[in-house]
Image (cartoon, rainbow, N blue to C red; front, side, top):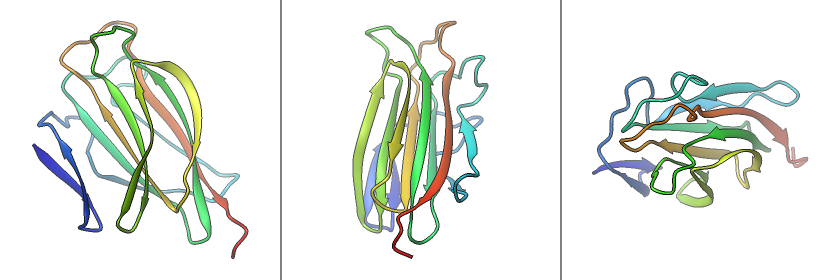
Length: 145
């Protein structure tokens, strides 16, 4: 098992998978709206490697939150363990916002704080219909600044 820690206090235990083509701790800065940036799983939309873990840590400027639009095209098999987890991150606080298992959809997530962490894992199986994940993100003002 590997650990991914935030602020040295909160840690996620990750099973030992490959990170070929991605990292578990990619750091991204959210641009202020209306500008946006994107990221995706490796090889989007042609599929993604098996036994992989990717993670993206997105931070918005002070007095902003992150808006994430996430498109997932994962395995529809009941036995698939492919997943996307989205966490709110604030200093030592880490809370799971949502988990998506074997879904094919697009959804929008808003952080409560300035940062989000997105964790994508794939199992040891793949199918032609699996494209992976694609995300668009931006920073939205909280109006407190």
